[in-house]
Amino acid sequence: MPTTFRLVATLEEEGYLERTVDGHVRPGTSVLALGFAAVQGLDLVQTSAPTMRGLAVFSGETVNLGVLYSDQVLFVARVPRRDSLLAAGIRVGSTVPAVFSSIGKVILSGLSESELRRCISEASFAGTWGPNAVRTMDELITQLELARHDGYLIQQESAIPGLSSIAAPITQGGQGIVAAINVAVPSSEYSRKKLVSTLLEPLLGAAREISLRLGGSLPPIPAVSEIGPSEQRSKGSRPAKKNR
Image (cartoon, rainbow, N blue to C red; front, side, top):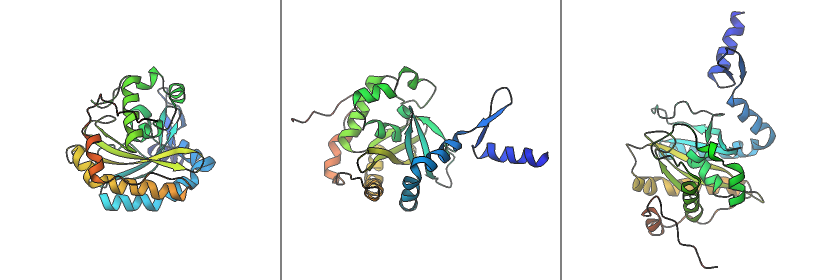
C-alpha cells in the first residue's frame, strides 16, 4: 500500500492526477498534454523541441509552446529558466485562459470574429489574474487586431503579476495558426522596449523555423525601424485599416 501512495503522490506532483475537494483523485491536466501529443501534436512537439532549446539558451529565459484547447491554452512544451520562481506552477499539461495568455491571444488572432465569439464567452474572463488582464471582449478584440497586424504580441502582467511575455504564431500548411511560442520574462528585468530589441527577432526566427518544418509560413522578420510606431500605440488604440 505505501508503494501505491507514493505512486499516486508522484503522479499528483507531475500533474497526471489531481485531488478533488472530497478527497478523490481524477486525471490531471498533464493527461491532456499526453492526449494531445498522441492524437495530433507529436509532430509539433518533436519539431519544436530543438528550436525551443536554442531560443532558451540564447535568451536565458523561459520558452513555452501552447495550443488552443476550448477557451484555454494548453502548454505542450516548456523550457524553464532555471533561477526563476515566476510561473513555477506552469508545467507541460497546465492550462491558462487564452484571454490572459500571450500564446492564447496570438492563436485567437487567427480566428474570424464569429469563430472567436464561439470560442470565448463572458465566463472566459472570470478569475483573478494580473493587473493588466483584459476583462471585456472589446478589449480583447483590440489586442487581437494588434497581434494580427504586427505578427506578434507583447503583454505585461496580464496572466501573472510580475511576468511579461512576447509571443509569435506557429502555422501549419493548410491549417493556419495551430500554436504559438513565447518567451516569458520577469517584468522587473524587461521593459517593453527591451523585449522588442532583444527578443523579438530571435522569437520570430524560432516561430518561422518551426512553421516551415510543419509546412507553414510566416511573413519576414520586420526591421527594427518598422517596429517602432506599433510599439508606441496606446493600449486602447487600434491599427489603421489598410485599403483593400
